[in-house]
Image 1 (tube, one colour):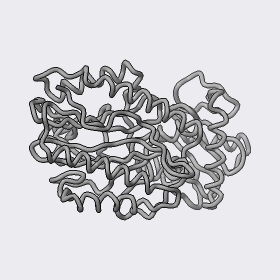
Image 2 (cartoon, rainbow, N blue to C red):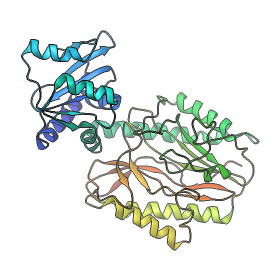
Image 3 (cartoon, rainbow, N blue to C red):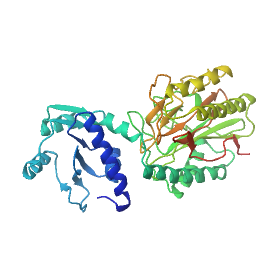
Image 4 (cartoon, rainbow, N blue to C red):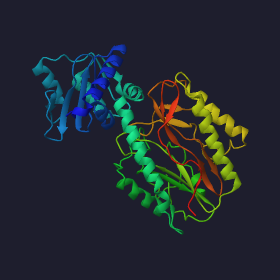
Length: 391
């Protein structure tokens, strides 16, 4: 079950969960969502991870066969967990944490019925809070992803051919991603967040609003997935924003760069430089204890000063954040919004993405991934940040 090289990391995480449960006066948590299973076990399986405030965790596994560990019990259905508890003389928890924000109603009520706790708490809130502070092993995974992410971006200019569409351009980039080790799947928290490997926005498509809770939208290929590239022809004067996933390990980096077909307008270049200024000002201000809303407000003030408030984070629909935590999912905590009172802490990893949309040209701006340290931020995604000419 547990790979030897992950043992220390997993034990650190189990200890953090146990400490947090004690503060909540909870007796145990039961996890079954894939990202939480990976976080706590180092792999994804069908089944449940069960941890009390003291002792080792239990793994109740449906699939796959062949896993071995003293704490593993194979089951066909969750009702068997109660039978195992009775056989082993284990006490049912009085307060049990379940993934209330992610389980289906039927699964939630079924587990409540099986354990019959006096009180049920929300494990989703607990796990999202714990996962925003990264362990040393997790930070190393980000560094690996960042290096491979930059390698793929260095090959993007080779993917371009005059006359191609944004979709054809994206297909070529996706091929390079897979060749460089991308695992393919793009995990996100919440409804209406299913996309494949990332997003490319070219020209007027960058203005198209989307139901997806990402910084910018796009019409997409079909009404069933209204986000990103839509078949726009890459002609002279077009800005192409490339925001393809950095999922080269289970921990994703986030990086956006802008490519130009021919010459863009002066307004586009000015807006891009404004985005770089915002990045610089925010990273200079970011320290442990700084409130996330203060960083958003820095961006908003600069955009307003430069007369670009109407273009900031969209036009027809403007995103109300300028950054977000990243990890196993692309949209973890914290979130840099005007309302967030959360403070930055060491070992948070977040993406900062000040972007502007210029009608008739496309989207410009920047996105990088940063590690919060004791004294400031460290940029993880290192690659050219000016607008890159394709020809």
